[in-house]
Length: 440
Image (cartoon, rainbow, N blue to C red; front, side, top):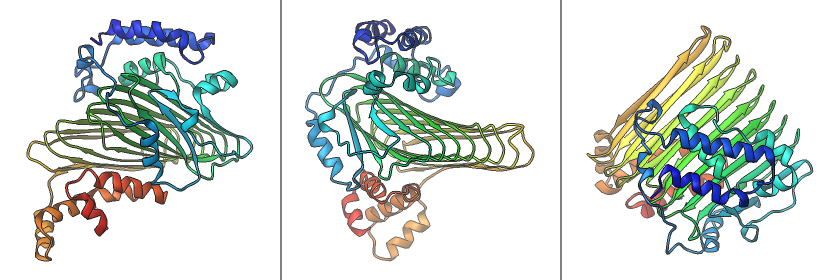
């Protein structure tokens, strides 16, 4: 049974073998983290931020590594077949870096791309500055965040010196194979002034497992970071993720969350504008069916003037599934001339599907342009009738309208290969999607 005491014991058993175990600062943070987790336990619906997504069942439910998962090399080959971008590929299996499966072409001067375990051995001082603390920045996600810090076995470390750029995307591939029932990964991305990079997270495999993933982004003045996360884990897995960014003056951060897998997926995504003229894009699409559950909680903190944010999420909810979105935008008193738009739209594909959408604006400045909204509905009968009169049968007419609803999110992804991959991943989940892909 996965009681809190079991998790504490698990951390003590693994502590000596975790990367950076000899570093006093990391040992102290891990000790504080497991103590924090033990005190708080798993979040329940009594917490406002978790009212729709209690994790109390993790106290009782046993986890198990997948028994018949494909070999990681097979999974990776199928994924890489969709890309021909010449980029870096860092591959992690069951929470540990696999150099034999990774592809690491030469890098421009001033750029570091490595596994977190390597960086802790070679550049511990750089990792310390970006690693994060036990409590995180939000009490609502402190418990899973703390468990991740206490048990994180690996992840990616990226450092971009001033003015440098990764010309091709960096792919971070996380595969759940047959070796572990839980994995805990932490990615650190540090972009100094005028640096630029595209980071892609792929989450695959899983089984009846738990994965916690924290991605921390520090964007200095005028840095530009594009981040895409494709979550396609097995439909028995549990995925708890945290993406947090700190933005300095004039920086640009775009994050795209595509959630197509896992029995339960929770994504907490946050950014804070620590300088004037910051820009951010939060873009998300989720498809849930069966009895699956996905939850996106977002926070954009406009702490400085002249910031621009755009937030667009769309959900496709089928079967007895549930989709949750709670987005919050804060505009501080000094953040004049803020321009913020927040929107969440959900399409219910069955009578038993459920969607919850709660957009929030908290504005303390008076010279702003802000808007927010949410919709939950079904396929438009008039649009369906229009397609039927043009000779399209009802099944394919519904799928065409479903894809059209989701396509707006996919089209915001800048890279062509990623757009094609995301489109194929979505269509593979829709009935009749293979034929629809041919038509598109």
